[in-house]
Length: 288
Length: 314
Image 1 (cartoon, rainbow over the protein chains, first blue to last red):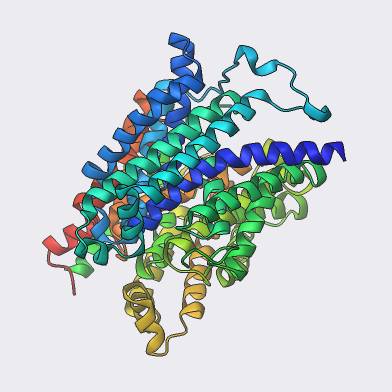
Image 2 (image 1 turned 180 degrees about the vertical axis):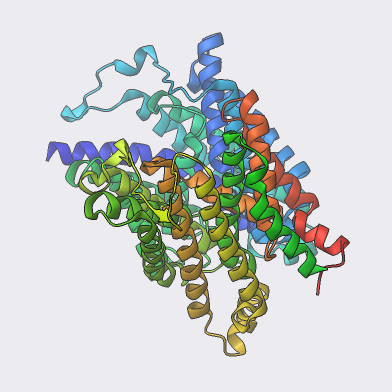
């Protein structure tokens, strides 16, 4: 029983971080109908940003998120404005391949500068024993979880309460109608891409104390992300959150009760089953 | 004009390895042929039918492992094993196609990526069959004599001609498909799948057939890979980056063209070699950059544009 609760806790904690990455991917898809294969590399850049600011300047990752996510917001806007915007009209297949090229480019540039070494960032307080009710809670992951909830809530408020948020949702529903209602769709696209990138990078920063980092880490993260958004339904933010928690749970329970070696496989099998039987996602809110 | 170009191509293909004794250049030529083969088979599905697969390494790996395992445990000749690899690749493609082609466009691409990851993880963990990350090794190839002469497997020339034969096969196959009714179905699916369905094309069946055909050729290539390098492990033959490189070749060369993959492979192997000397794995940076530039400024690919400039389009 204790093991079960333990793995549920760690599944939910990890799932919350997956959720941030997946929300970034899903809102970009919702608004622009593009699947950004370079999304994982944005997480990777966030991770390395946090790693270097900690190693070189001693800034705690949970503080340096204040630097990296706004910076990556600008980077994301620039990527959309200068690279993607002119490619998107060439069709979704070309856009998909273009982002695959971008992903390859960024990941291997990082590999060139930072080598393929596995690095870890050890926070001095990460080892503190926190055991409420006898369950070990990894403290770095717990802080990351709280911050992920705060950021997701902030995003929810942005989307539901502000003019920009309404414009983003309107564009996601129907970009032509939104344009007719006076929404500057091009600007909204750029902003949305920036928000998606910032979320990915923020998740990367939060993940750094709990995960190995290496330049091609984006590859495994993006595949997980696809599993999540398909589970939850592409384009749906609540679906992405639910899918992420579900994947987190499946992975941690699978590692305990099935096999550590196959824990990643379980997620992919689940993914295929959902694609087959419920292509609009488990909760029927996405678009297939 | 087209026929002259094809004839010159075949002539170059046969003469090329005799021009140099340097085994490094011979190796490069073999790599160009190998990647042409992969690009051409990916192109059958991705170019003509517009179904972008990010999981073709699956079939490469299956072909490679089939050839290797049949040789090591059943002592089956690797040349037969290569064909077995193609057949097994095609067999595996059948259920994969039936599953993944229930989806369209980017969803299909994501599904192929997931399948490829599942297969890679299984290959990595199924120690009894694949020896896991340790990989499989062939020390000697069975002797073979051709017209009374024993073939020297230490030389690269025999491998060159095997690769050339495979590549010719793939190119002729691509050409035949592009001229056939089946090819027209594929194009119809690429251009507008709903209309294709409306005029009575069984789109699932046609797409699955294209995938099976494509997987057969990739499986053959996988068999060749295992015999040529004599060593395979899951991360060498099931890697996602292999799938992406196949896409790269077809896109850079020109989607849905017969000669595109040749051009793509020439560009790819040259970039790889030029940059490999300077930075270790740095050539992938330039693949990525090149892919972005081509899609942005030359979406029809290098050969796609050249063919237009030379007036070779029908």
